[in-house]
Image (cartoon, rainbow, N blue to C red; front, side):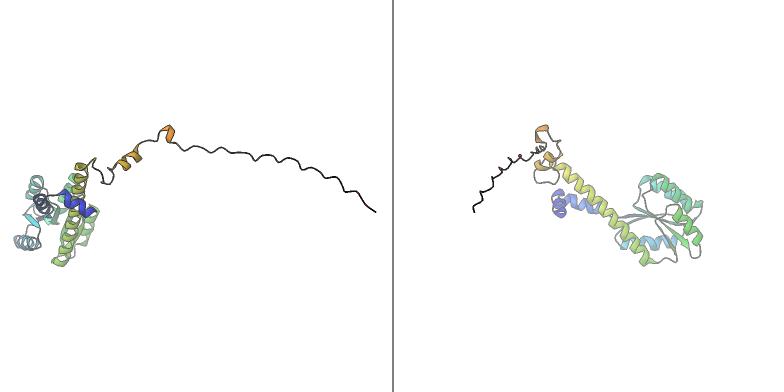
Length: 208
């Protein structure tokens, strides 16, 4: 039923636009040009939108200009710490997932990142299988959110139409408060009738 509602909710043009709008957008923040290039190529090859920033200030401008769906940020950055950027992001949008990248052995920084609200962390050299899995999970959550919004919009457009769950006449009647006449009547309790006392029969005469 949900699939049918979604199909009726969107025209082919709207469906194409929705698929484009649900494409995961990733912002990569790292000061190493070679790593930024590799990540950009890989993430784009996986079918996601990707933008890059080389420092904290550039990343903040990018976040203000066009907020992404996920941030992939190095912990150690020139002109500031990736942890500081993480905390700023969480103050603005606590639901925006941020995955931190740290050098192998900097587990303490990774722990600090998780305490500050990071969704996850990866150690360098990066495990691209793990990164791909993280992005797939984030993309799945993004699709679910867009599908839920599309379904809500469809139900609002169909408000009042019969046959739609929650909008049928029967469902509306159920929402109406019961009138006094429709309240269930209480059954009167009747006492059982008293039985008449039984007549005492006279003893039969004795015959000898």
